Length: 531
Image 1 (tube, rainbow, N blue to C red):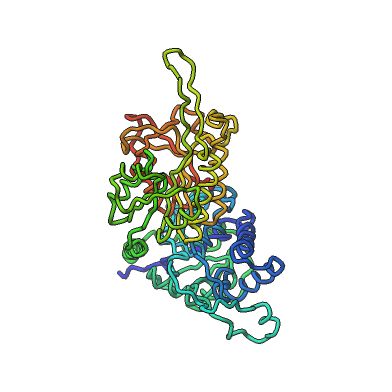
Image 2: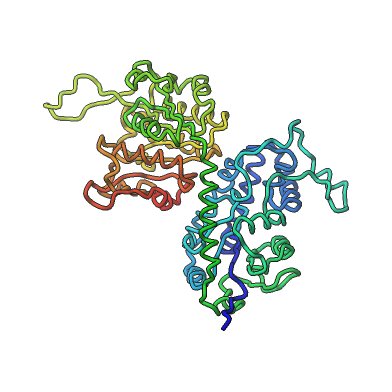
């Protein structure tokens, strides 16, 4: 007896406005962030932003692809960080109904989105669907991270004027180097990467253009967001929750072909290869404040992992450098001097900021007499000068040098202006730290902000780490953390996409309670706050 197979073996899903509704407001906010990026980062006249962005989206599929086509050169990661970094992800709500539907389907399921992988991971996590798909085909899947400039003479093509002068099909518009939907090339490339047979695949998307392109390359298509079918759409569902009513045949067979298992193995293998290729060259990382107790640990950890990192350190004095062994990789410089910082960040890929103003105890304190010691900051080393101006200098220099990521270590307590740390020397240290953190978030550089609890000089790697937000951990009994654990989190943040564009409070359970943290990807995945 011949064994039959179901008509479809793969479901290919768009993400935004397909798996969650347009009413979430994510698309609207994303569109506004794109316009803001065009004005703030590319210097485009605000008066033409609306017309320009609409023209680019219409002719190139995405505004980003259009901007590259007409001659703007920018870093892809910076663009995505700016556009997606401020999105109100809290508007995306968990969807247990959709989760149940997806898990009940005996077919392989894949995400295919124009967005970057970090945005896709965040959205799926908010939906509660992160474990419902075998893979994600995203911007990075189709586009190289490093690319050549496409416009050597730096001239910008005036597409608005061009479109006003031409009414016929615009085949002679400049080409974009970005591969994305609704380009048939993008869809074919995605199918090849995932080893998908288009004739046995259902493609779900809210965009009519994407559906039409998908149909032209042989996919079976489902238009999401309307019950009215259009040309090239085989099915139409007003809501993704209507999937079972519209396509009951998807549940008719519980058999899972061997091909599915082979695909899963291949997709995972491809993902590993892509990740390995992206990180084949060790990252050059500069640790500022490398002479401090936590900074020394971070620097040492990076040195120990020489297959992954080229470690450099920045200290303020010759004495600090000598204490670290006087290595050539340890530079001497003052973060309050923009020129010194500009020199230090040349040629680095990532920056770990561990600089901080340090209060000094006033002389004459006698603990035997009770009372509390008094503290002061040395002239020129107040928090405003170190934690604000000094960190701002570092961020500005890093941005100018094309640094790809910044990890900034701060302190919990910044949400409370009356926190006792602010009263030390009447210097408002947490206020200035918080200001620098906000400056980093607004810079457009991919970042991770780690606000540590009370720092302890204890062994690391033997406690369960805890992440929180808005100083909530200060209301618990778990408000401290070993410096070595903070250092490890810094190093892990340099390696994991889940850590990018996130801000977190960090503490740990007491030694001997809980399970020591080893899965840092899962740790960062818990974090949803951007500031």
